[in-house]
Image 1 (cartoon, rainbow, N blue to C red):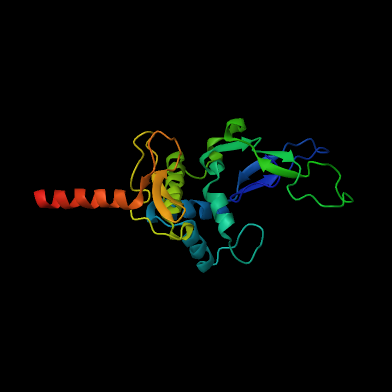
Image 2: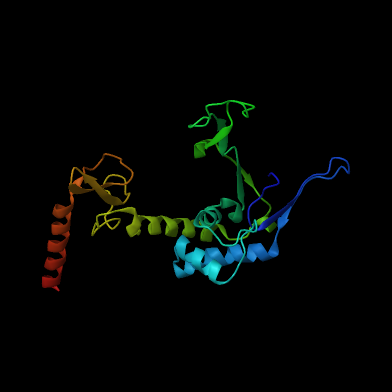
Length: 219
């Protein structure tokens, strides 16, 4: 699994001279923090940003001795399937850097950068039950909550779409999201399945308002 393991675990490297294998075990204090983070998202509906604030307010130190938590570190933990009992190998591959240095003086090889592989190429390794920190169903609910937080985040758009992520595609079932084009605003399938067309924002908003008004009059 490599010596630079995830937060919540402790890895003792193998000793060739002594003939002992490497050992992966839980770090009880860090594992407790991980359980708390997943519980905050699952039960309290906190976003990664709010989890970040709570960790810093409680004075919980990050793994590598940094003074405060960063959002990237929080998301890395919340999205790590290792806590639910599955570790993946072959997630990245070597490649040449996009912005290569003009001088190859310090480059020992051309492929000195890495990039993510498609998930279909990952090799899953099921860990012993004793190394699972959270239940599988909780991990899945947290992934869904993080996706909802991202879909409804106002920081991701300059125009507020009234029905963003509240309407689903009739072709594939994915959510409809806002899609600006040349100063006009539309809704489209987030999966871009192309089974259903985009629709003008005002047309969809008006249709929903009329439907709600008709339902109120019937009631």
